[in-house]
Image (cartoon, rainbow, N blue to C red):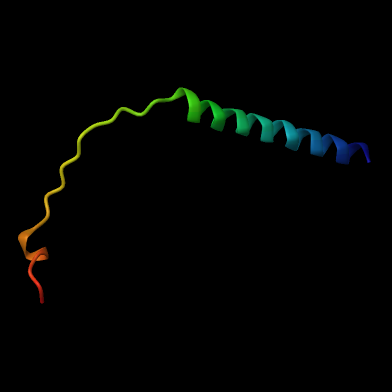
Length: 48
């Protein structure tokens, strides 16, 4: 039984670290907005 508790504790710690990293990325990293231009060929507008 102690090995089960140790395993569950390790899983909880790893899960907490992953949750903390995701939380930090979501709240502290700001993406830089930039303009994007996509060229569409003229033959895409022609009906077949």
